[in-house]
Image 1 (tube, rainbow, N blue to C red):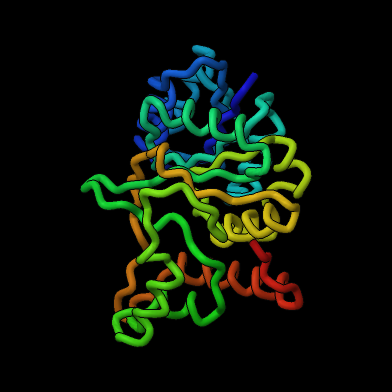
Image 2 (tube, rainbow, N blue to C red):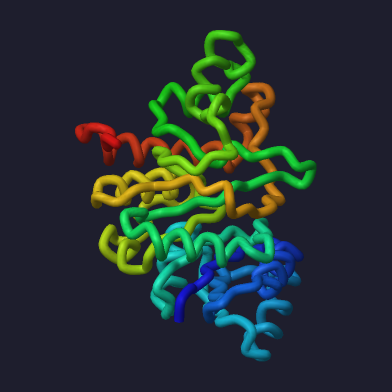
Length: 268
């Protein structure tokens, strides 16, 4: 088996169907499998996934509880047989040649430990899916209205690589976890996702571990995928403080910065 596609679902309604159907339309010269970990969903997505599992189109793994993003993917990888692992959000639809292009590049570039395609939104806008490693202040700016002030906007543009040429394949600090490919051996070598993060920051942590292991993280825009993405708003501070997802992100960020506090950033 060449490739194992891992998807973690939690009450995402119709999105897993769009994701799986897009993968199924892929034109590849190698065999691949689709493994879906359901984190104890209770919506209509479960019925669809059960039907696909019975047809043999996917392997469905019931986690029994909401494990979160990292632990859910780690569970899925335990069932994987592929040389490469594709970590894929249910709200991402790959193009027909995405998997082939990513695998081809990994096959011919053994130094690459993690590869991220170009992600774009439904309106065609390119997502800022490659980033530089953040400092604590960057997270505060990104999640608050401070990003609208000129000084902080300049810093935020640097963090999200706004001036980066998103048409060129280049080494980057990190790519977001919505769609990323790794050799299964590299994933195992670095211990997979750190399951201390329930949601957020686990992709940042994973990319940092890839660099620490002596491999490269690559942004690869020749392969593309559509991201049906809903961004956490940078609305008023009072609105933001009332959002559960905001506090989950803050909790994960504290764990991340504490974990790496005495270690220098990887040099590349």
